Length: 484
Image (cartoon, rainbow, N blue to C red; front, side, top):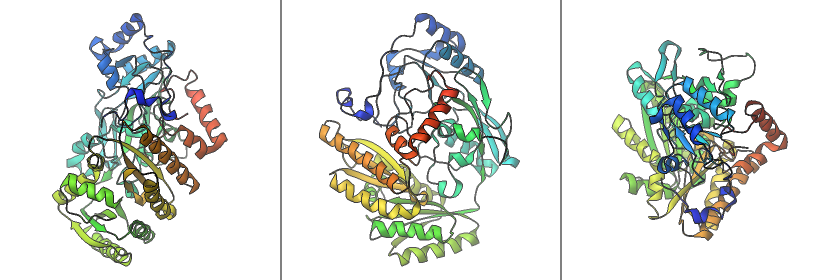
């Protein structure tokens, strides 16, 4: 996913006017040597190409690169780096796999990018307690490969093979969250290096309990903090048993309303569906072409059920009855691993499938989340708004959570179209807020949704967040310019 906007175009948009060039390039030779003294010369780079690579994520947001990139090998080095940077007033930008979608790694004030991917050990596995401790360089696919022979897995899957500590930092979720929850539900403890270099264990050193009533929820404070309060150097995660049996299905609907009504009815019937994903007809056409599928080009649900063979048979039967009642058709069931993998690979490749609809154009993805009862209303309205704004876009979402994404295809040379994309995204966020929802279900705030966050939580909420930020980061050097 390449850069969406050329530099000449970025200045047109208020959502890209972030960079403060006052600190850019001000790292002295002595400071760079001090960085090298901490991690070793091979693990520090000031090369332009490396800095540029670390100055953006997968989003359309672009900014200046950091002044230097460092790769610590252990938490002691991270602590020393944080103390060094903080003591010298140098901004700190944490970096994982760079798969974020709201500009969370953009170095708006330059500074030092701390790439944590070389800390990639699985530190401790406790299968009897259903928990594991990982360093920030461990990705979800690596962890699940490691767990394969243990009968356990980690179900949070944001699509990209993101780093698990990065997923904690952004509050990630994915297709399995309707049953297994998001990162907020699956992080038990975090090791965090605070801005001045102190190390914090949010639930206490080595603790991995399932619940606690002991004091403030510090773990919850750092999950979703987007690198603005500290650097996550280890995460204790909740694991789940691999289900005995799995079956997946697709089914088509005559309208968006019918598909979303079925989702609501399935949830109201207390059917323990593991995945329930919505793809509109534009998205289905794109998936058919990109993934060589032969599904009906219509609003579609992808579903998956986990459990025993007997339980699955009952769940499938009840689900079919609900779907048929809402006009669903073209059922296709996938029971074998290869069939299911092909189905979900098509879903996870939705971004690339969307890009192929308009060759030469770039993609912009935004997301919102609303109470499930309001989901039919906002999805139908969003389809109408795409047409009204004359935009090419697909809709795909974790509708079991009330969360969905719009992937918009944009000509980077068309200034007027870029303005329409901005207006549409802001309108969608405000529409979600008007329906008692949130401006982002899983992408985070980063750079792009700071105004919407203010509208969502109000003046008192923003002031409380600023007070927390000021307490933990009084110099404002941790990932500056993000969230607040």
